[in-house]
Image 1 (cartoon, rainbow, N blue to C red):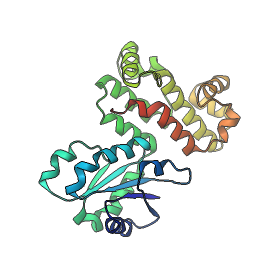
Image 2: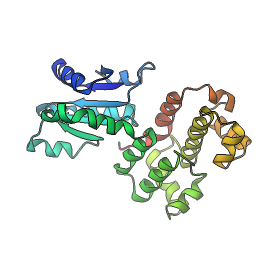
Image 3: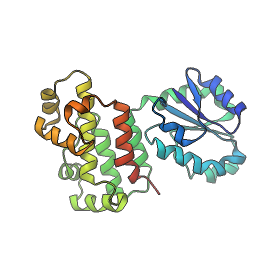
Length: 252
């Protein structure tokens, strides 16, 4: 489903017609957290005269569901250049190009996986370079074979484990730790592999952990047994990961 935020009903209708498929107009960030809402991409529409006032709303949306790509639609005006430099979106489309470009841009934005979207958020953040590189690496690797621990991550990006630990703690405060972040990525991948039909024995072998170790990791986060983990919806688990382990790393 495509989410649409627009200044006016007319603009919302314009985007809905151009986007095609199933779309829903979103008025507040809290609506994005609704259990029955499956947003694959958000088209954020604002006329140039209102764009500066809408930046806070745009950032609120990005924090609510940070893995959802956002496409900004606005007017082609030189005067808005300073405003555009303050936003981080997946793509930019001018109002005059909606009919010819919007559908393709939406398809392109939706083509990237959720973890790739999270990695891109970190890549464009103001996190220290060493931490930024490490987090991007860990998120991308989690799509296949997640990084095992802090030491392995540090070796992969040629950085001191102590440096990564300290920079992560400075960034996230006491809301999560680097070890918890990496452990949660392992659980996300484990659940995905199990959902494809692999046995827990095969999942453990593919990830390089004993089943008992995976069980302990699942008990740590999200706080359940492996059997209970199977019954959690993937999007629900991803939402929990983003809220508990990823959002604390975003810019204030």
